[in-house]
Length: 416
Image 1 (cartoon, rainbow, N blue to C red):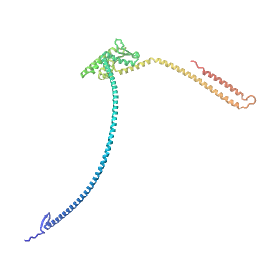
Image 2: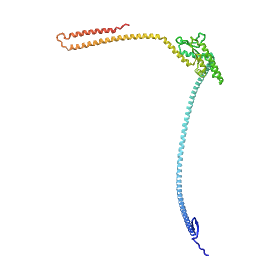
Image 3: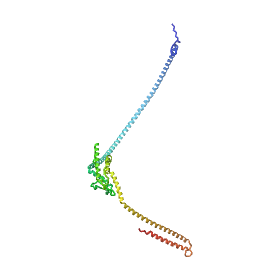
Image 4: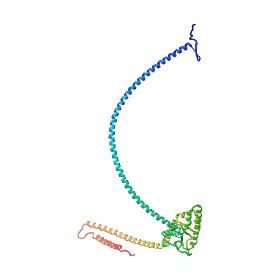
């Protein structure tokens, strides 16, 4: 049975395209040819690649041999350099050892000198320290003495009588430094038998100013030493009561009409106490003002004393005013007498100037006449111009007589 292959028969449909068997075989043959061509090209490239790799390996082998030769050469050079470096290192090591020994010796010397200097400086510092310790011992002794004095001052202030004496001493020092001795009296007795600490005598027979130096310091110290608010309030009440009693006593004992001023001073011997009273005890200050008692600190007392000193100075100047006026009158009389004598002297000088002018006129005439006489020619024994010369001589005589009288008047002083 004979089979016939129909190449035009449809074999494959791709989308809308229908491929026949011949087309399919033709496409397969073409694809086979392409595959064979690709395989041949791949084999050619593989052979070319193997040849390139072989050539590269040969080149690398040559380079490795050259590098090995260079390495062997460098190694031989390195051996030579190592030998030379060994020699250099040996010599340098000997030099280094010698330098180290020298440095060590110099360092040993320096350390020895430094230790000597340090020891000397230590001895000097110890000597200075001993001196400072001696000074500290002296200061400690002074501090102990000062502590003893503070304790003594505390004992003085704790005693009421000695504390009053201390305040009075401060007050007396301020007053005696600012006023003359006749301007004040300490512990003077008033007409009612009371004795204030000081009375300042005012000018123009005015009543004296009373100054009291007592102060209730116990109540004040109680305020400062209070441990809590209750104790502080109680101590403040006690302080106000003591101040009220003291202010009342000053007002009743020392304010006497016609004998003392209507205001007295209560001296507080501390600026801090004075400031605290005005800051925390305003009621005490107001009550003192109503009782005509002024609370003063040392600075205020000093200021008041300076004001009183100015008043005393003004009063003494007024007392000496009549003496000053008398001296001024005598001075004016002397000035008038001096003016009169100067005027008389001026008159004498004016007269003398007039006489001198006349003399100059006469001398000029005489000079001109002499020139004329010198220019004339004489005929016989007698000059022609004899008569004018005689007249001029008479005039000169008269002028000289006037000058003599003037000289007598100037020399003869006028009696007072």
